[in-house]
Image 1 (cartoon, rainbow, N blue to C red):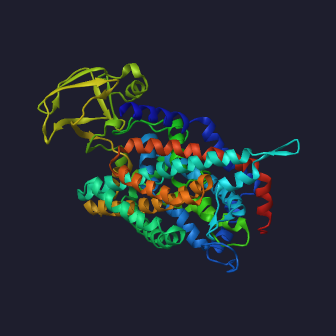
Image 2: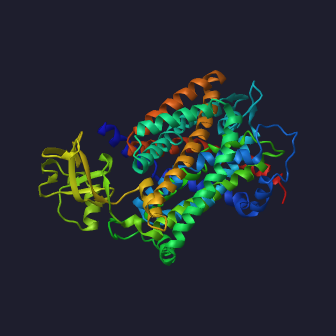
Image 3: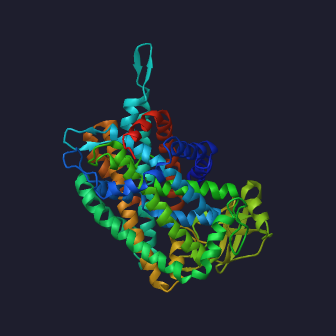
Length: 548
């Protein structure tokens, strides 16, 4: 199992922060922003009026209203990325990661507008009368190559690749990390076994998604506004409680952008490149601009012009990242919990043991990157405590303290083999004080305010609503991709497999889940971004139909 984790970690670390991906993602957004005349600013008011139904006409084809389509798309984006993803980005890259998340969102508004406009234009009507759309449909029709009076179906091949990646992301983005974070939070908050949470919510998921798009939009248009308001109020209370630290927190977000975040408290420090890559990656994971997922939901909307639905979709990154993610980030930074150590149970994937006693932050960071500095040998444990030696255990990128080894609820005594910095501690629970990340970090931020221990319940409830609604939307995205690849008869088998995977992921390793998610995002985004760049002139023509 550890070898699989290592492979996924290496692959994630290579492709999700690779300059080609980052430059393509940001470059596409910047190009469309300038080429289309800054639609984020120019058409923001019109987007709000369109959402309110100012330009609606009942006779237009479609299955949903603008609000229903936006709610479904937002249910797919407002998920664990807003709670756990922001916390993970700050944990790895420092407060400056939040800056890059917001920048990604503002630029991504143009990307989201473009992908939805083209996808809505080339949507199709299925035999059952419902609409189906998404980047795979515009790719299939518009990315073919004409050569010597014959058409080469390159667009179809690209569409198939995109659809396959969509199915991967349906599990890696919308399924596995969502239930995993829910189940973990329910276990830590209410002591409910993860498998029990997975079983109950898997049945609830099946009840919704087997009803098709009409049942999905009925559920999401009620869940999304409620969960957004609940979280907004809760996060605002935490920020107000720490109001004296708000300005210093904002200063650290902007002040460390070009310098990196120095070591402080338990935090070992974050470089500019790390903050930028994690912020962009988590920003994309959160709002999905350029990934090509939201267009699948917006293709069902009724409207006269495809660009009108593009305007509605443009509001998603603003709501999801500029508002909700910023609230989470400012709450974590102003509370200071991101650099504090807490008692917790260590996850195997977050443990690295180094063959050094030097606790200097820069020395430890260098040792983490050097495999030769990873400890190989034996740890002798006596009554739960490791005997001193030339080694240092890091957990969650911080020096672990007060380390205790237990087995079957009792202090462990014996020897543990360490290979390449990883302890072979099957059946042994390692706990102590260290930094924390993901949902537990956000929980600590809430608990640091007037909410106290009650803050844990607010985050858990928000996480449950956010993540469950995301899983609903991504099941729909996956079944549209399955329909494109294998036909309508494949939809029901896909949904069944999706629900089963949802259940199994409730007790999977968190780190493995995040690696799969990050990899899936890149694999799905690249074909869509390339398609948008190729069809930029057509997108400009559709935009001109909007007028001013």
